[in-house]
Structure formats: structure tokens, C-alpha cells
Image (cartoon, rainbow, N blue to C red; front, side, top):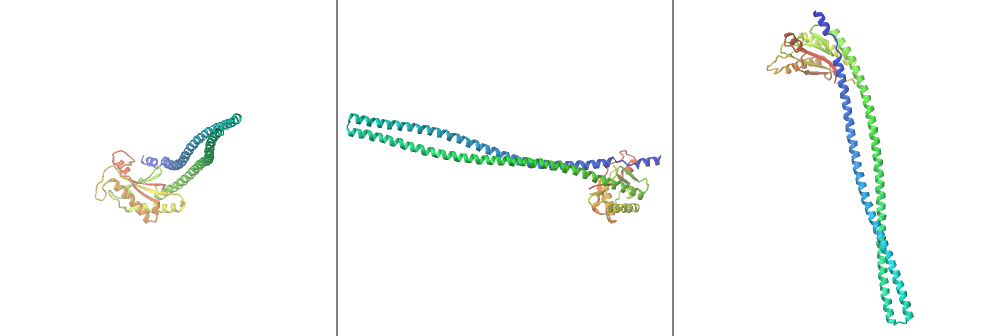
Length: 348
């Protein structure tokens, strides 16, 4: 009966390893989405700025167009006034000629004739001055219209340049999205390859540990973790390694050193040592809580392995106290199962 139970407990559960790999993949995708959102934000800011400039230029063009229409209207009015003055001048000249003819025909007095002629000449001079003034105003209006035409042409050139810049920005945006998608695919492939490589090394490491540690009831494999009962390493309420625990850790250090030589340096892996206690509280001057005891035991194991030559960069110590029990029952057997140290080979 006990033998059958030990066999079931030694069965390998690959589900936690699959969950770790899936979590790593999700984190990579979230990172890519974050990069994509940041790129989209900066591109939208750039496009929004160009849209604002475009709206401002369109408003200026509309204003200049209105001014041009007003100038054209004024020009038409001035041309009509010039035509009217020319008609008046023609009438005055005709009147002058008629008066001259009348005077010559009737033989009127010379002084009267000279007065009429002088008056007519004054009217002619006044009309001529008005005509010159209107011509000057018309010339200035034409010059202003020409300047406005030049400004409109320059604004149209700026508008065309902005449209070209906007098209180029949209093209760069599409290229960035394409590169991000390609990068995401390559990253997914690389992550999958790393997970597969680490899984292969994890399997080799666990197989070697089984050979080294042998079959013991206080050492089990649960999923992707090696589970050691705390009594194998520590006395009750203590974080000092006993002699038997040191002997087992010596075997573990040999396997870890061999693993460090086998795994390529570009694979970021660590051996995580997790300390766990049962739910019965401990309150001493050295350990004010179960959490402190579990963390101290994990740190003791890590420090011992470092003393045996294992790289500190490949080790992590964590304390979980009584908050991750394997067995929720409140029996001595459940308490014993929950007092444990777990070793997990995972990504950093």
C-alpha cells in the first residue's frame, strides 16, 4: 500500500511547467503590445500636430481669399468710377467744343468766352486729377492683389509639403507596424525555443537528481519541483542545516555545477529554493513568524550551495510560510507534508 502511494507521488506532472512557459509567453506578448502602444502614441502626436498646422494654413488661405475677393470688388468699383469720370470728361470736352462753336457763330463778347473756357478748363483739370488719383489707387490695388497671389501660392506650396510629410509619416507608421509584427513573431519563436531548451535541461537535471538522491520517502517529485521534507535538513524550529541535510546538499551541488557547464550562458535560468511551514505558528526571538522561519531555511540552503561553488546568480531563496500548503488537513501527516523545501529550475 505504501509502495503504491510512493509511486503515485513520484509521477511527473507536466502541467505547472506548461503554465510557466505560457506565462512567459504572455509576458512577452504584453511587452510587445506595450511597445506598439508607445509607438502608436508618438505617431498620433506627430500626425495631430501636422493636422493642426494644416487647419491653421487652411484658415489663412480662406482669410487671404476673402481679402482677394474684397480687393477684386474694389477694383471693379474703381474701374466703374474711372469709366464714369472718363464719360464726364468726354461730356465736358463736348460741352467746351459746343460752347466754342456757339461763341464763334454768335460773335459773343471775348471776356465771356474766356470765362466760360476757363471754367471748363478748371473742370477738366479737376476731372483729370481725380482720374489720376483713381489710376494710382487702382495700381496699388493691383500690387496688393499680386502680393496676395504670391502668398497664396506660397501657402499652397506649404500645404503640399505638409501633405507629403503626412503621407511619409503614414508610410513610416505602416512600416513600423509591419516591423513590430515581425519582431513579435521572431520573439515568440525565440521564447518557444528557450522554453524547450530549458525544459530539456530541467528533465535532464531532475533525472540526474533522481539517480543521485535515490528513492527516499522524504524526497518527492511534485510537478516540476523536487520536494524535500524539512526534517531532512533542519531540526524543529531551526534554520541551521544538520549533517544529513548537508550530505544531501553536497549531492545537489554536484548536479548543479554539472548543469551550469551544460546550459548555454545565454539562457537565463535559476534554481529557486522555496521554504514552507505548516500552519502552526512559531513566535521566538529569532523567528517572529512562520514566514521568517521559511525564508531563513531557504537562505541557509542557498548559502550552503554557494559555499560549494554554485554561482549566486543561479540561485534564488524564497519563503512562503504556511500560505502554500500541499495538504489542507489539520493532521500530523498533513503538517509533516507541508513542512518542506521545494527546488524548482525555472527562468530568471
